[in-house]
Length: 97
Image 1 (cartoon, rainbow, N blue to C red):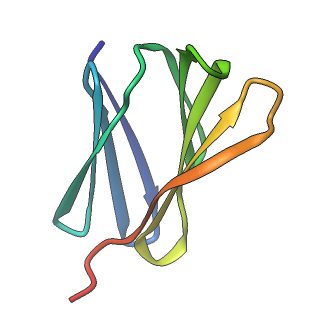
Image 2: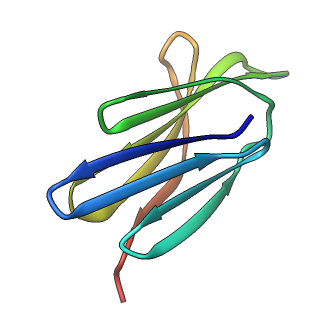
């Protein structure tokens, strides 16, 4: 599965590209790659959120949530299907020196 999502807020330009087992996020000329351990079943974007739905042997159906925050800040969390938070896996401010 290959798919790209775009989000623009003021001068922030976000690109999130989904590959088979990883996600590449680009903002402010900087890129980061995040590994996804499970097979991605479905993806969708709702405003500043991108969701990757997967199935995990331990938790069953769950999803990865990427959020494009203000000031080029990215947050990534993992949730069970029922919305229960499992853990944070990404936290980065793009373009910081």
